[in-house]
Length: 273
Image (tube, rainbow, N blue to C red; front, side):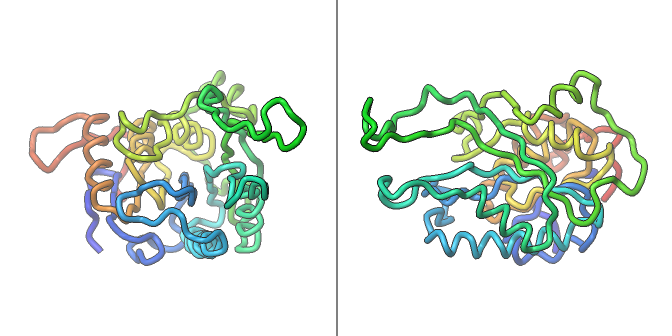
């Protein structure tokens, strides 16, 4: 199918990831994504509050698709919540991270490690359970996780160019990342992640010129990171409004080249898809 937007090494598809056929199997070097969290966020038409069993079924389906698209030495960085409340809080929290990792391994992914992302948003906390009492206190970690998975082999088969600095490598290989989340009002998307997240994943786990895929593109942050780091990027987003937002943000982070439909002048390191 024809991309919603294409320029240089950047492509955006306005399509359901489960149905897309335009991406060749065994063609993706790295997947960086944050799927819907199923916490009743308004995604302009997407129902983000389905029963948890249905959410896990959906998770398995898209993970199967992602597994097929990755190269044999392909990797995935999956940003998901550590846990979430479900129904009455007195019934406890659901270990979303545990369930999704279990599904990913069942699908065929191999587990490598987990990065703890400290969003530094503890000031937003409002739920305490039984205040100053042992009756039923809540223990809530103000963090998310980035699960690092791979398809068949961890070591990359080919030699490539790495653009990560010594300082970045030392800092980012520490499994606790400290940087703030993104302002949803500024981005105009209900659940954006900051550019720092995909940028770190891309520079740490892929070579310059590799193909990076985000199956749930949202506001386009992963592709902006691709543009900034000289990677080829493919984004899939089911909502047309968010596709338009992603292209607009790509234009804001790139260089206008004159023509109305040519928004971006990609890095010279980006090849043609």
